[in-house]
Image: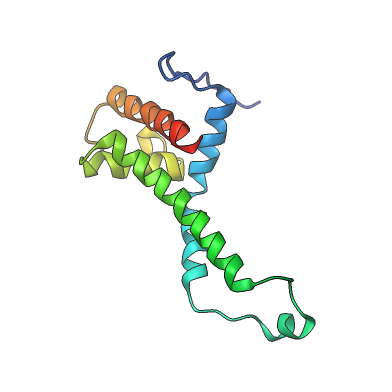
Length: 135
């Protein structure tokens, strides 16, 4: 039987549990998005088999550029929200980023330059700002 945790998103942040789950899943795709973006920017060509068969209709370069643009916007959205929450404190940004994008719990993060209550306060504010930016 799996555990269920009640979200402690205070009334001032007003994020529903379903919206929180959506934002959390969005953040957990961060590394996948970065890898795909890197792959889109790398030199590649259409495999000969696809070229002979005709491949997909449309313009492959245009599709790649549109996908790369979308991925870049989503990655920047997460990064901007992290910077807005933490300011110039790079130490907190890095551990918060590991928490929200890799799913590491507070106890698995190693050295955290603030207390647990302040860390989770930053985390809640991050999801609040991400929710507002993503709308």
